Image (cartoon, rainbow, N blue to C red; front, top):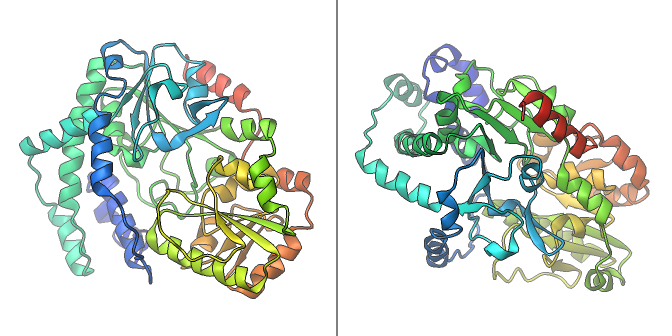
Length: 446
């Protein structure tokens, strides 16, 4: 049973449980994971090293806490891309240029922050001090079980430790509400509402507008955004600034106000692409170049590597450039025509390729706007579920076996890049600068 089936079955009960608006996020991921056949691969994670990075982050931009700000942006360091020698937050730095200078980015380190002198953002702090305050606050916060929910889980034989998440929500809510009362921002901007539901609720309770800038795939399978239930709007952003028209027309979307703006970074890449000498030398001996964006879950990495290795051994005239989400020191024992490469931005790598391949990374949405077609490897039916109704079959083909993969390679390499971009216009609309300016001036009244 997935979350959509569960909600449809118990709609009348769940709509009367206010906490379900955010508990459902944890529940949805749990039901998604337990339906997977293969989930684990041995990947060493240096937890001690990450912990040290977090401790160091406490004082990141620390003096910036002591100013007044008109707007707050909540992001994480993975959103940063290098532009002209500086790390830009691809969602917020262009936005901040149009806002008051007094705009603070509160950034969660995705492993670690970039050095202050390397980032574009003028006012930036780490979110780690807030997390520490929230952790301390948990000591004083008590939570109680929700009887109606317990009965449903017992009836369906579902194990979901929602109390731990409830405890976290309540403690984080108190701390973020205190922060918002302290700074009194006119509006807040976020990169992922379901990553910080406590922040969204706190802002709405204080009548502060919440604006989310789309960061990844939003479709009918994304349970954080879609539901058949009528849920309390205080747990959702006031506005969603989307990549294109598909999100605006999505049935069952939990966010009422959707305004398409496109993507600052995607437009920047298209206008400023340059050939990388090292990468060009690497791809020169091969007939077809395939860029493969990897996922972050261990089972996904295992399945993707296995598929690509098999394809590479069958045809050594195709080069596979594997683009990892995170760097690790694992020896995958790859064939000579499969290389791990991350020395430049993933989008720049893709633009050196003939085809983009992934399981269901959001790069599948972006690659066609760069003129590069997709092959989606359909494992556990994720590719089909995520992109069946959004990406055009003109430039995106879904495969489940090696034979169909090679047939798709032959077909897609014949396509015209300009026609691919035209077919993807509903996914990413153009004129980002014009549209974000209109939104801020006419809809947010800035």
